[in-house]
Image 1 (spheres, rainbow, N blue to C red):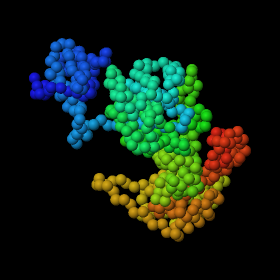
Image 2 (cartoon, rainbow, N blue to C red):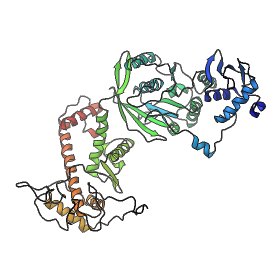
Image 3 (cartoon, rainbow, N blue to C red):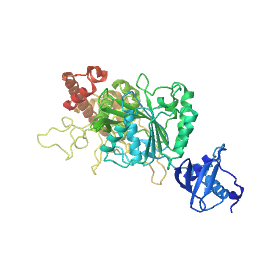
Image 4 (cartoon, one colour):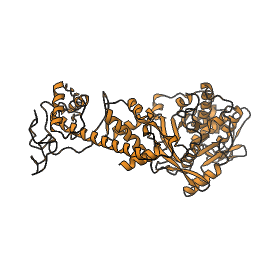
Length: 561
């Protein structure tokens, strides 16, 4: 018999249950007591709670109670379950051994912590929350995102009357999957009432398996008597939710404030949330936009465009067929602002197009990842996407060393460029004296490591003289085709980016002109179509959409393109 078993006299009921669950000994709950597997003999044992809060064990195979208590204490230490009234301290090795953050819904909903989903009245919050909960309980992918199947408890303090119809509609639209992993609590649980909190804890403890997700719908109905604007009351509510969820996940459904742009009440809720998601609805249409305002431990995900579809007795959530279109609409608006005004800061872009700064900054990050914009010390600038001119890009040059008979060379009439270095024999782009090798898009290419394996020194950014800028501008005017004039600031940035190589700078500047010309023509077509389009819902118009609603504006853009 181990020393731990000899010295052990008792263990609290809560710690005993936590240890039994952690050691996977839990079996079932029966008539106010728990049936579990004996940690010593493997047979069934009964666990009851004594009046003093300690646990009483009775093994059906006859194992002594003090030996069971001793073994459970050993297991509690192994699973780091602290004694009642004490905090569990971790060493540095224990900290490194903690599991890495993971997802319940891949890329969207964390597997632990507090998540908050908020939106205006009638925005579809409960539909999304129920869709998430049922996906987690059944293990079905959520709109293409993989799901880690876990037991779920859904506290429906609001919208209980239509909960059955919503579940039937969801089940029918998803092929009737096995939903035995979810439990519904269709009544209000006041988390400010100690007795109700204890009832909730006892109810969760009696489940065969601890829920991996607890949904509280909504916060207002679950903190009766509390003040949402009080950081103290919100902090107490968060503490109770953390107590119920343990190391697992909780999703709290909440409302927006009067302005409709942020969550209602104290900012303490947003500060404590591991995920803060916002749901917006386009008027009374079925279109919904799910955005990520904040996400700890992970990078924020891009907005999703959803829609409410009629199914059976209620509606269900699905991806909107125009999801990519709306996302690209925002990105095109941003790109047009960057092309017209760049270099420009992210905040200035948001002000120019009238969109939320958080959404604009996320879209700018996405545009940088796909190589459409770059961030310089002066702000964001577009990356030209027009094809390069033939040959080395200088007027009079071509891939074959000359132009075909009767064909006008790209860039204007043939002539020798000023100070143009000769093209190498191997066909690589010409280089300026002392400049680093240039990539295909004209930007200098830098070696990350020297030949000896040591990190290479950062190249010195060449100084661009005013004469070089004027010379490049004059060359574009003389050899160009009347394209959009580039500002001196932009020409300076192009020369600096190409390491002072005037040949590469000319090619890059020509591509900039082509990009600006295409953007200007497209913008003119859009304005012309929008001006002609009729609009039957002017009350939804936005200033950035030329006085038209979003739907009519998108239709006009489609027609223009």
